[in-house]
Length: 113
Length: 113
Image (cartoon, rainbow over all chains, first blue to last red; front, side, top):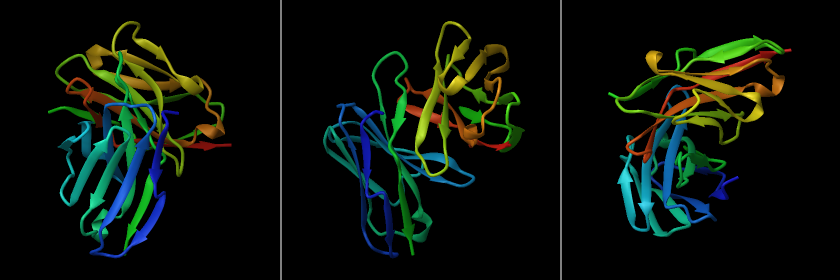
């Protein structure tokens, strides 16, 4: 358990509304990630952060923005949600050490109607 | 291009039978390799990891994996499967100094009683 929580765990929203998902970690890891998981597509990286205010795009970043104003929190925002953003969203941290492995939060199931 | 292939989308085995899940990768340098497991409705859990040293690595839950450089493979094995092993299994390769992971699409394992 890498001390990662995600909120909310479930959310239903309507097309066109803004949505913010929060990832919180308790162990001061520098790297944090947002993924989405969809059937047939596996895990796809949306954005990641390598420090406070330092972020970079992943492979499916269109329609998403992120912010990291504190080490422990990494926010994912859908400015105007679309039905194609219905998915399960996972946050992860990367440890620092020999393997730099990633550990995952429990996920947020988002439904956009 | 860097990629990870898990050739088997779905596998069904009987409880007590042996298991091998295949993972092939394409990566120019010495890779960091990982196997994760995802139980239904859960987040991803790290099963095992490899970077160097003994090419047969032991993980949690009785799993092991063998790195074969000549075959660009990192196959996951378990000698005797339990019903609780039914889950989705993902292979991943660390890229860019492990800043990002390249993911396979996963193999879904079903276990017959």
